Length: 391
View 1 (cartoon, rainbow, N blue to C red):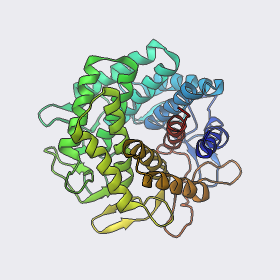
View 2: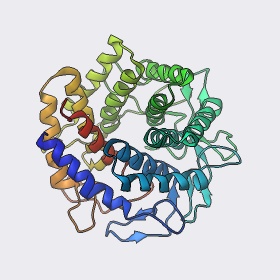
View 3: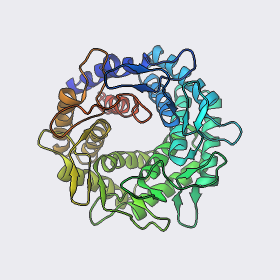
View 4: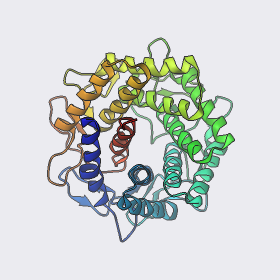
């Protein structure tokens, strides 16, 4: 066993997952919605639909890969909360946010949230073979395709009210624009459909996932710059000059995972995956081995965000597997060293900081909240454990 694999595996079992396991809400279900920067737990914080899905995915995947029974117990716990409280049994789909008791407080249906529901439910099915979970995943898939897909523009829409009437995409827009189409949502629909296809082998899911890969190549990826554009209007016109380094390297390996799952061999797609990885290696790796966050116009954000570092490790490991260029292995080693030295919270009862500022200080931001869950860093661990396993 490689030292890197050994370290990552130990880190998952002794540092990451124990932190989140202690947040189980035995009274109201699910997991507590917020852990403040000082590591105090807010037991009355809202619980996000995205977060609930990510908890379910994380513990399901951890059990499927490691077979440790405590992770299965947490997966069962997360599943119960998701289908009983976060799923809207009247209008279908997952709420954006519920309160700590599980009552909807923001009942919007966002395609991004639905995608994580599919990702999680299909993973729970893969771990447990519970047919009900796959039924729920297929129901959400149908909602996305029925309401969320714009056939005329070959795009997935963003935000809806509880009754699935389209509303402006307030939840997933930023930098002063309201985007009709986002790369972020398309990326996670792709991720979700990849996992659903692994679980179901459905011809319809195969067809829709194949179309999504084409969308990335034809609409989102810029073959001249090797970046992905981020925000678009309804006609796929890019709304601002933004480079999201973390999303690009994450997309590189997630698109590749879709290609492998679909058993597609296409030189154009293979080149896209590899060119994105080289581009981010050239443009965003900093002297200390970490990855910068993003660039808006000429302004580079040097904040080292937790999920960006985690996804970069998987992305560069995948690029090495694709190219056998050892430069990528050096980038993986540099990122892991940076994560261990700066991102990992060494305080008693800590996990990972949200981010580290350009001056090296941890950002004083909640370390558990609707966007920060075990998903990114547990997935990085599980992916690396599988990829580094002795053949």
